[in-house]
Image (cartoon, rainbow, N blue to C red):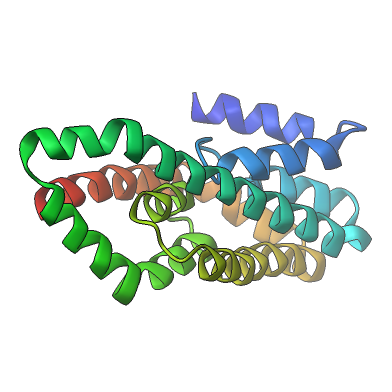
Length: 194
């Protein structure tokens, strides 16, 4: 299934509306879609290397806009779903303590790590909304992290071309699997921390 999604996105990269599709994929990846926009970014940069910075900018802006959706999902889902469950189990205080720790000590670092690596960024956008991480700081660190990631990938493709594309395509499966393990592991860790 992942390979089929990858191939579909790769074909989409050659479409005349590829810029819009790239923005759409970057947007939804930040909140729920499993495939990173790099899958479209790579062939688009390879096809038109002079526009590398424009493609990176589209990815960055759309991804941060999608992060706002992820944040909203976390905030809204917590109010109507998460909070009643925590109340039922008497875990509001434990969650409040976890939220305080996340918001004061390691939340911005977690968002940055998710923004620049292949860690599931959507997990951090949603969890940040759930805990009420400072929204302005969340947006700022998202812009820096996502910008660093997409501009670096696009620049490396502009500069070095095919060898970078080969690496990403070769390791797509293991990178996706690692991201999935980290996503599930994150939820398991949250369950046992609370």
